[in-house]
Length: 209
Ligand code: SAH
Ligand code: MG
Image 1 (spheres, rainbow, N blue to C red):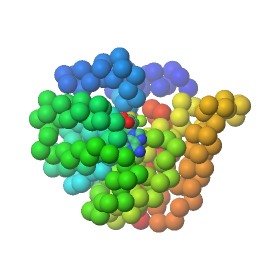
Image 2 (cartoon, helix red, strand yellow):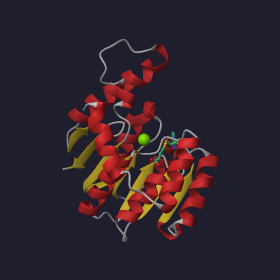
Image 3 (cartoon, rainbow, N blue to C red):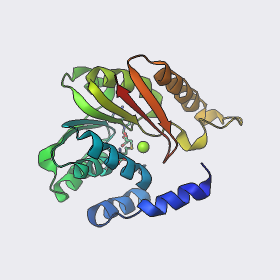
């Protein structure tokens, strides 16, 4: 997609108000990488189609994407995992402000430790945490995904570096190479069907067959 397309689409969906708008400003001022407006809208649409009962999210940050998902469907609950304690505290305050605390379980911990302890099934899983560990998150998520469940990963095109042919700077090389491997891994995985969607920072969406 070209930049003007992205700009055009983004301003169409940049309609949030109230608490979500407040969180967007907070995130922007504090360099917290929350989902982009067009990704928020995409998640909202998928949730309205899927009507999941239970959602699992890896990477809460300050709760923005959790709130977007919860507001899209009134009968769903979310289990969200965040390893940064300060972020998790702010997320909790935001869930309280949004009157959504009763539909959220927030686990403060590293998803690499938490995921292997989970056993319930989830109808929709959103992976949006450390890019270097997507394969581990993905494998655990597949185990926890219900039949016909949906698994969405954010940031898989990582600011255009993953698709770029030009030389990758040393500091980003590991992440970029891992993300390329991850994309091939996901596309070749049996038992799921996956699409790559170049909105926001790049999404993958998989359905368990
Ligand atoms: N989903 C959020 C943004 C998440 S940003 C939104 O769109 O609103 C990514 C978050 O993942 C950061 O807050 C980071 O602390 C957290 N994170 C990174 N690695 C993690 C891990 N292994 N376990 C849990 N959280 C992790
Ligand atoms: Mg993200």
